[in-house]
View (cartoon, helix red, strand yellow):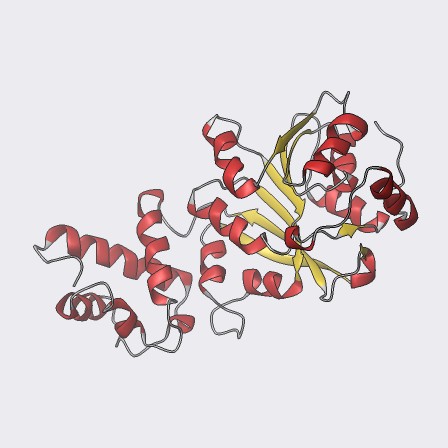
Length: 293
């Protein structure tokens, strides 16, 4: 592989200048330049020979090189054309276990997934502007590998790991808890990155549950219900449900789940929301009731 000092800001700056490139704020680009953090993140992925790893936003390849050294088959998704040129022509041009997918990952990952190239692991220093959107997209479309290891804004990691009743608990918390047990394993100060971001970052390990909270044939119903319940956090669950379902239907569903309807979404556990989704589906299936108001 390319012999490059990924932890030298001087070397990175010179490389960018030589290639007429610059950091692009709209892509949320911040290079991780801590060698210890890079090695630890790669180690947390558990990548080894034969492991299929997806990396999102590899930049010029710092984490990529650590993953490739494990013998894993690495597929990297990069939107920046200049970085793609460095990755394909300089860094890994003759590396057999490296594949580059150029373009917006939100528009390209599903093609790989649909083509039967699902990952065993996703490991990435995620661009801050796409992190939560990408994770939600993966789970909603049921791309749920055994392990995901991400560097994200600490605020986003707190939301992923939040439990019922926590201040950070949200629909995103419920969505990730559907399939994963998530743990914040490491904090990274701005100085670990170049350029230094204005926020702290954290590494989260998302380990797939032995059994999902939600049956696969209920997943779509559950995800839709989460969106409805958390659509307006200040409203009660009864009022949020009434935006889509007839009042009589809502009253009957809540009664079957032993809920008053005055609860707010952040007080419900993922398991309680699963029970609500199951009851709602069964009720709509067996009763001749108009679905939307």
